[in-house]
Length: 317
Image 1 (cartoon, rainbow, N blue to C red):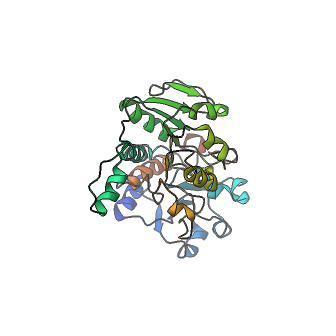
Image 2: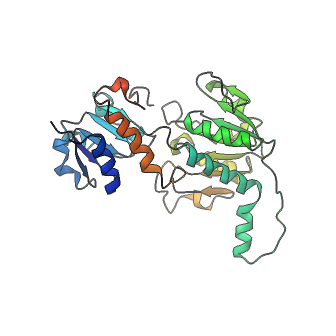
Image 3: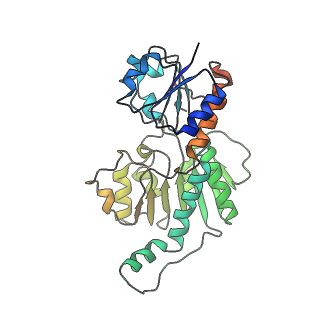
């Protein structure tokens, strides 16, 4: 019997060929959310980004047994109780984002340290003016909050820049690129002396709104804050206030509570804030990497115990 695979993200012919080579009997369809209704009744496996609304999809897909998220984040999926309580297998793309996001973070840090943001603004104004407060990353301290696959790649690059690397992780482990590891309950201690604070946590009930006014006040006035994880982990009003009051030096956000960020959001005009449109993980190699995970799991389906990147729907990761 053929497996019916439906992707809600447009697959290129070479991507379909990759899947077909691994499962010759599969029927592979690429459709938009609006087009999906015609295919959902036969769908066994769904490929979609984790921000997809499953509420209108599940009732139309009685045969659905597995969802592969093209993203690491699956909080939108798990917000639906019907899905959390179902037997549908969930896998994600955890582990493919480390290279690009680590380079994104390093680019922000270097641009901030070397005053490149200011230099660009002066260039647009045809202004020749000394760049004040230029600095180095060498021997500075970075605190990485969340040391999964992304945090690990960030730590590796920052350590190779000669930085002192602190990290917060739920479970203790030997980390070759981390100078000091803190348990989750000691975030305040980890960020207190950090020059850069980088968030790479999953979004769970415990991490929602974690970075608020209280934590920003624990940071040094010279600290720079970066969130490349999930938007709701940060209280945006508190961050905006911290930047306006110079509680911290600056910040960069790639993720937001509401996306796309509304045009009327005050964040657009917040001083010393860099905004990127949730693209820290973007890369020409993205689909190749996530489909490699999917294809490996396709060999083991429906044995969830052997499938890579299985998400515990109760824990949220």
